[in-house]
Length: 251
Image (cartoon, rainbow, N blue to C red):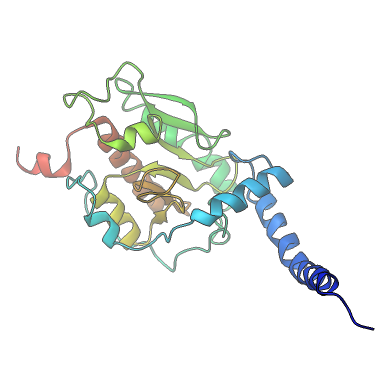
């Protein structure tokens, strides 16, 4: 019996679908395990994530930072993070898959405290509200009353506009990782020393957050909390046009 091309094509498609199903099933469950985000936790949300993943960029290269115009730094020298980078999700919804925070440490030291503690030191220029990127996270924002096109207040860089004034948030309802905006040279140091990586949709010409949008790994102990808070402070300094490290050195 001779099969038509249409029949052969249909059989090939069916076989390909059958072969791909176990991967898709595992991938979908990995998406659900990532917890709440801007994409609904259902098939519709998974399809959104798959489409956006077509624009995924690498996250640890350093050359990209030297092409950005901002050359000031708000971070002092950081120590190198101990151990290898944690594994992260393959999705554009960034989450950490290993080196997890101890539940007691997360509940008693991290939850509802890191972002709030830093923001409390900058109430004149910032406020707290739900993240526009992660609808379940409380985030630090630049106050609406501060003009973003006046160089006396905030540089008219694209970063503030593209994050809709959001500065930083922690996923303290899930894995205690963070997202925040960092000046180019600060982001370069954070990535180089193993504290984080860029968002997979962050980069020139990509329909996502700005290149400066950075994913920080969850702090595992008190010493790492101190480093993470220093990085969040640098994010606030950059996004509010506070004094940079370089400016302080010349005072």
